Picture 1 (cartoon, helix red, strand yellow):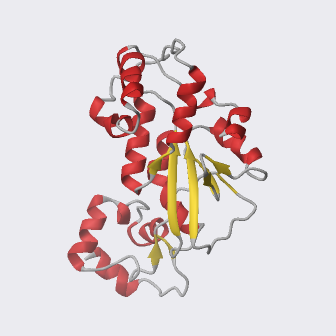
Picture 2 (cartoon, rainbow, N blue to C red):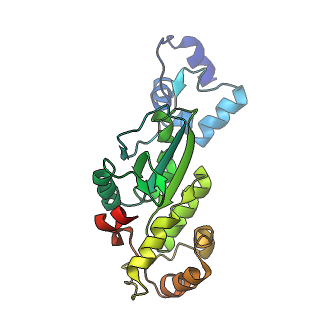
Picture 3 (cartoon, rainbow, N blue to C red):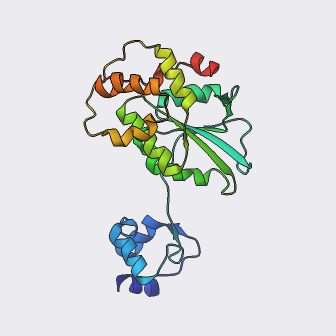
Length: 231
């Protein structure tokens, strides 16, 4: 009834607004139309956001483009990095070096930990829907980092940047892993087993011993600008 009254009593706007703006305008609650209750109500009455003349906004992310990037190019390759230091390194390197692990990257995205799980849809604002996307991900080597990698790759159908993970392991050169400063008890083996399966058997044994059982980790920051230049 409330939606019906809003549809017939609200003034018609020629330009669309965001879902939250429309939700507050009609229901005095900016979150209602995107909530479970609101979405269920829309499905029940058969009304879409388009019919309400509103659209979903996505959380933006920080990114760096290569000098040759074009929004409508046929193929676009992007690398998501978990931490800001790696993004800053590649932000400085990308103008002169775009190829890493034999892949020419058009864009580097700062994933900001788990945030990228909900913000990668913002990519639709930056590139053409007709472009073929090739995404890669690299982050910390610890249960939480590998769990994030697993969720991002499976949700958005992208690949692990195995060349970067291998470089991290080689840089450490079987040295003792530093110990994690905080427990990651909420992360279960099933949360990262997909990512772990992309390492060699020898690497998996090493990670099981040093990271899973030994409470160790390798941060993405183990790779310096000099290391990225060599990749």
